[in-house]
Image (cartoon, rainbow, N blue to C red):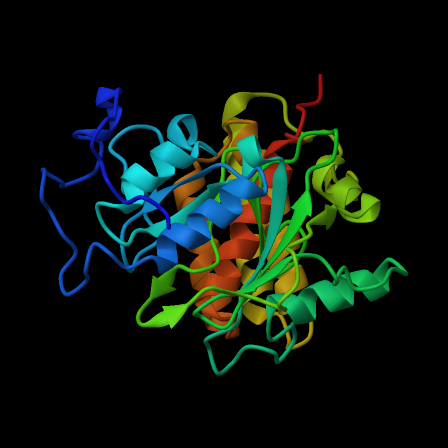
Length: 319
C-alpha cells in the first residue's frame, strides 16, 4: 500500500510551498486519504511526465513557486504533496517532452455558421485540407467542458504555446505550458483518459509540427509602406485600421473568420512597426467581429493569432 506519511522529509521545500496553505489545511469536504488523485499523479510520473499540484477543483497551480521548476517525477515528493489535499494534477509539457493539442468546444449558439463547431471539427478540416488523416490513436483525455486533449511526444524542433494557430478552438500546450491531467476534477466532472490500455503518446505528426514551427507565408499586404515620414505612417495606419474594421463588421457569413484573421495579420504588422498601438487595434477588431456576429471566444483567438503572426512580419517603410 502506498505510504501517505509526511514524516522523514529532508527538504523544506514542501513545508510552506502551497498557495494559501498552512500546516493542517484541508480541502473543504474532502478527506486527506482520497487515493484517486495521488494514484493518477503517480501514474503520470511513471510515464516520465513531470507533475505538480493544481488547486482542488481548479486549473490554477497550487504552488507558490514556479510550477515548471518544481514539476517532478519523484514519487516521494509527489506522495508528500498529495497527502496534504486531493489536488488536481498539473502536467508540465516542456519537461515531460510533450506537445498537447487542446480541442475546445464552442459554447455559443452562433458557432458553426461559418466555422467549426469544435476544435475536433477544426482539426478534422485542417487534416483534410492537408491531405492527412485525423491524428487520432494517441493518448487522449476528455475534459469536463466537453473538449479533448491529444498528447504527443515533442519533435526535435521546439514548439511554442499557441492559441488558434492551427485553427479556431485549437490551442497548443508545449514548452512553457501545462495541462490538467487525467483524474483531476472540475465542477464535479472528471478529466478522463480514453480506453483501458497503457497510455501511449505518439510522436507529433510531421505536418502538424511544420505548421507550428514554420513562419506563415508572407501575404501581399507585406509590401513596403508608401510613406515618407512618421506622421504619414501613422495616418496610413489609422486609415488602414478604419478600413479593416469596416471589412470585418460587414463580412458575410462564410467569410467572417477569414476576414478577421487577415485584418488582424495586417494590423499586427502595423503595430509591430510602431505605427499604431495594440490595444485600440484589439478592441476595434473585437467590436467589429461582434457586429459581424462572430462568437466572442472565437474572435478573441483569431485576433490574437493573426496579430501575433503579423508582428513577426512587420511592415517595412519605403526608403
